[in-house]
Length: 185
Image 1 (cartoon, rainbow, N blue to C red):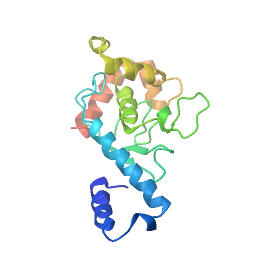
Image 2: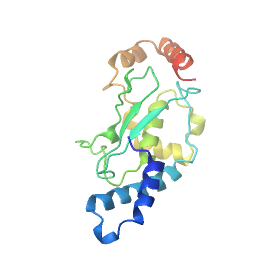
Image 3: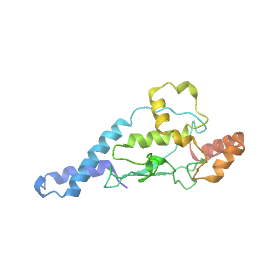
Image 4: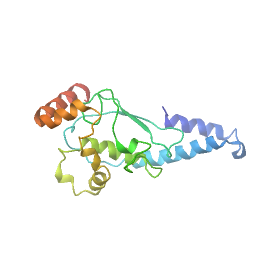
């Protein structure tokens, strides 16, 4: 896993000992990637809308950014145990934009950023129980229009959670609340 701050410090220390002519292509690619990441992480400071079944929970995600970023998507895993149709209890995530190849055109593209990943993850938490008071906000509208496919529980990763949601929304909410109290505080 990439620790961006230590990577940038290490690269700064190496700059004095190398000339740009001796730098390899992969070093330059990593440098471009790191510059992109610094900018994208700074952009993520903005507040995103947060409502729905999972409100009040604190969910941690691990993001591994490969050397070939932004040509390939980052790998994301949920570290917090959760009851969710698109996230397994072991942390695997079903998010269309994290797919490298997609026939429907919603998969990863070099024009996507970490902000898109965060918006996509956010959309997993603001599905059918979304607070419509926020629906007029530009971020919400953009997020909803880009990731509306995530509101569909017909093709879930966690089949048991999806069937639970379809069968009994109130009991589903209770189980989500229980998971938040136990694992997401």
